[in-house]
Amino acid sequence: MNFSSKAPPLQEPSCLKISHADPNIYSAITHRLLFHFSRTRPDTPIVIICVGTDRSTGDSLGPLVGTTLARFHSPLFHLYGTLEEPVHAINLEETVSLVYQKHANPFIIAIDACLGQSTSVGCIQVVEGPLRPGAGVNKQLPPVGDIHLTGIVNVGGFMEYFVLQNTRLSLVMRLSDIISSSLYSALKQWNLHARSAATREQ
Image 1 (cartoon, rainbow, N blue to C red):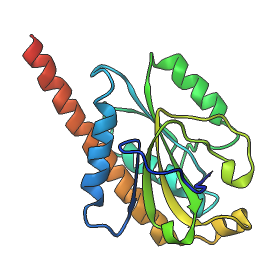
Image 2: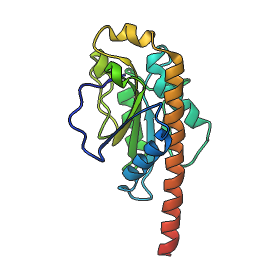
Image 3: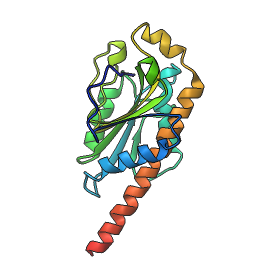
Image 4: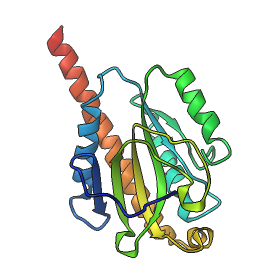
């Protein structure tokens, strides 16, 4: 669980924040992800780490995204964190170490739920730089990710554990659907681009 504090002035294109109700949300997130992918080598392994637990409605966003992505059985990415095998406070550090052991110079995408201001609930953020999980509930966990996506599931600042337990599942499901669909679309488009670029170089 991450906490969205008052953000510094938006510096395009390092951060995207968009409401789940925005009709352009899928294309906006996909294009922002493609921008970040474009700054990697085409052969860079993509690793997705979905942080959270199914024991809390609000904190289940990451595992829900991971479970949806796992159904694609795709070779385009390496996935850690599902409802059956969640990545959470207890095993996060071990998981990150395992990622670096198994994958050479990976590009890591971290996904987590987030608490924020009331006006931001229902927004999805795509942010350059590592996720700092646990900050919203005063846990010291290692930062993770070259970029991270967060869904703001409820209001932060007071009784965070209680708030997470009383978050609407419908909103969490909606945010997880948008994130998983947009991310998979971006990965497919990036793979096609990388393959066509490789063909041109031959």
